[in-house]
Image (cartoon, rainbow, N blue to C red; front, top):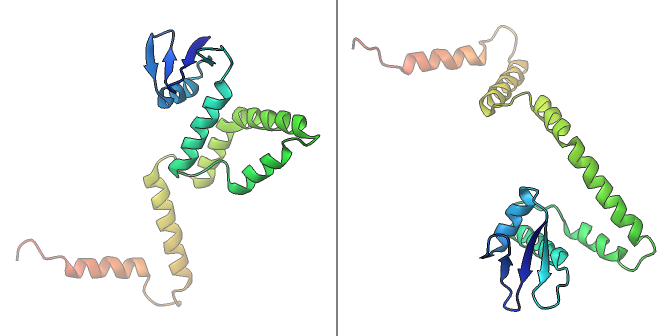
Length: 162
């Protein structure tokens, strides 16, 4: 297990690499699934949760979408001190573990729902659906909108021998 030490100046020191690191570096350790523990440099107390919460807080503040809405955070706060707190902790941990186990299957299902692994295929499918909708509103015997658009484009295109 990799040991990180937190000093009173709030800096983090990676004992395995013998250098100071940032919260972004710690985030990369999490993403690479590397086991680590953050210890207070003086007392040796485990500060890992505090650092992880700080990373989550910074990610939430960036505004690139959120995992923890205000409502979810308020509900979590209400569980502190409640007799169900222990059960809620286990429930959240098991729910996230189950979600991670199912994540690949969920991605495959989402791809199937979209019908494309390629954004161009998805755009073509959307365009086809839009044309089908226009065709529904085209009165019988009138020009097909797609054909009319193609004819208009051909009329506007200058001939090469002119």
